[in-house]
Length: 121
Image (cartoon, rainbow, N blue to C red; front, side):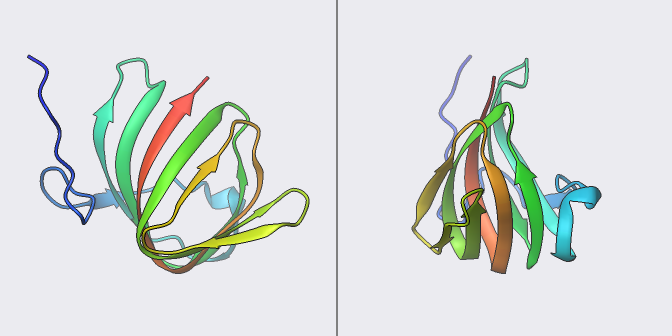
């Protein structure tokens, strides 16, 4: 049976965030990514996923050759710099989309909690 999945304003559906490690060590440019997360919904083939992720300040080189991502920032601040050098900052209540093919800098300025939706081609 398919049921509704409720996400609270803190981005949680059931239970707390668990320790995780999605940031590749070789991509880290500065700081230390201490991460927690929860997957709320995932299609069996892994092509579509919705979850919540929280991380301490750090910076990484981000490359999405086959992934598109939508994010809603719940708390904290993040700066994204694209390949042309344009930087955008996002805080609580802001949303952003990283389209397939995005490459640039992802920098958590203040411990960040976001709800994300990933689509993998």
